[in-house]
Image (cartoon, rainbow, N blue to C red; front, side, top):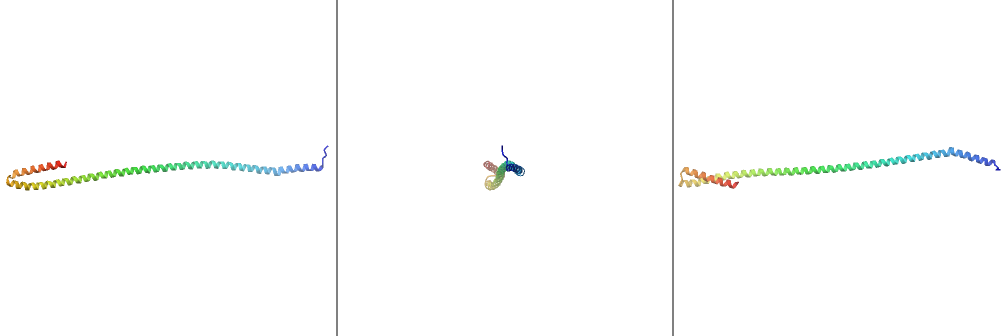
Amino acid sequence: MVDLNITMLWEVVNFLVLMYLLKRFLYKPVMNMLDSRRQKIKGDLEQARRQKEEAHQLKEKHQNELKQARQKAQQIIDEAEDRGEERAQEIITEAREEAERIKERNLAEIEQARQEAADELRQEVASISMMVASKFLREKLDEQEHQELIERYIEDLEAARLGEAK
């Protein structure tokens, strides 16, 4: 049969004790350390995934805010352009109204000057007519006929002048 040697038996016992000691003092702590390292890596990966999602959400949020800011800026620009166009129309309208007022004022001044010129002309015509008529009447007409002739002449001149003015 098999000869068992005491040395071999001690070697087997030593080996089993060594295995027990290794398992107890080396294997469990190494396994615990590897498990804790595995858990830490798993946690770090999970945290990295969450941070990546958060970064993606922040990026989308910032892009939306930027888009809204651009839209608001465009809206402000559009409103400013509209206000500018409205103000330009107001200025044009005011300028036209002012031009119309100036035109009416000038027409009134022209009418007043025409009226004054017509009055002055009437007076001058009446004066000249009186001079001519007085010379003429001294020679041929009496006072009553002289007055009628002057009035008729003035009326004819006024009718002719008023017809031209219209």
